[in-house]
Image 1 (cartoon, one colour):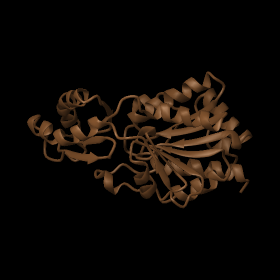
Image 2 (image 1 turned 180 degrees about the vertical axis):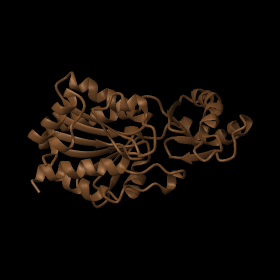
Image 3 (image 1 turned 135 degrees about the vertical axis):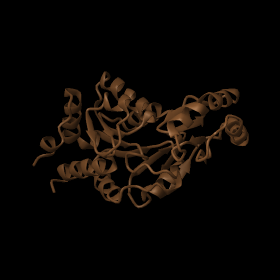
Image 4 (image 1 turned 60 degrees about the vertical axis):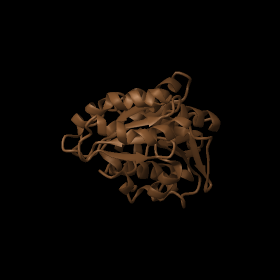
Length: 279
């Protein structure tokens, strides 16, 4: 069965994106989020690992399309390690929402925003005073700090309890808070996946793009693709929603295609690779 018969986007714009990628793959970029898209969401972020089919699927695609780029809030080197991407030739990882770039085994990045160190120091006290429940966890991302409530007894309630004090702390040091599924991330302003993806596509002169994501941090990337469509860049927007989990509505409602979590993303990428190689 042909790729276009197996994977039929629900919108004409999405179908245009598929046709453009298949017609001129060297002008296409495949862009992918990491957590929830290439790797299943887990309670402990340090235990996240890419679906076992990711490296093989990306190895095929990287040899056929203009570029494969992973755009993530994680440090770039960590996404490479957890994704098993070091041995996938040609893959680029934009970490910290584009503030870092990993390519050919090297990471390049500007200086860390000074507010991150102050927030890292003060955040435990802020959480304690706010009554953060047991199970609340901090993740030091180097260029950002994240507060996770996934392991709390009432995770959504814990997130709402902590949102205001965390936002106040971030604002005091010139940072912003990016909400996600049971996480609040404090990071520098002006850095998001939309800007990172747009810059990369323009750098590569892309005429088409497939972008897949799963959470609120990917909304900016979806918006960027929608804007670029108006400039003549064809795009396919894919929402990754794990089986049994409700998809993030802001993504699902804008997506051309919804797939069942990282396993579905891998299946999609494998099918695309087969279509491009004729295997």
